[in-house]
Image (cartoon, rainbow, N blue to C red):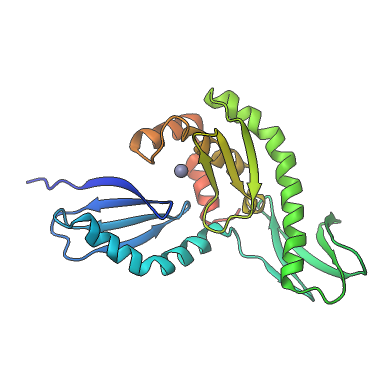
Length: 235
Ligand SMILES: [Zn+2]
């Protein structure tokens, strides 16, 4: 006899949660699935929504921490004596220069130079690096976004960038506005195109249904490679 596994997507605290009903499942199990950090919850068919919601609420902080680990991109190390960070999928050595009134990040001879005022802490250095990420992304989005519109035949009113800890991007369907995470500057540029397409497809299909995934795969056939990079398998 074939037992049916039923899957349904819910939005919990603004995060997509796939609820998978498995026959013979004894308990409620939650996992975070890369690269988007979607939450997958498995339980028996008879479990009521409020029951799994209570389990989810209990585990929520840990789930969000796991999501953050995926969505931060490749781990950078920023310290006063230097460090390492990623730009467009490549690792760069970081040189921190302390200069009065300075606040900029620049790519110089294969290094990323962060110039910050004396006494700056990790937070200021990070802000400085994210300004570089923003500039790089603004330039790339200007180039890539019209191509994504062409591929999908869809159009969004605007693309905005911000620091996001728990997602690569999001789509405000009503406003037709795509938000992208500044962390995408750490990944190969292909990931940027892939995430833009993913978010634009939400204009057609709100949830991560099989139809949604088929549309994304149709518009972006190399999606598996992009997902692998987003998961952190850097080239
Ligand atoms: Zn999505």
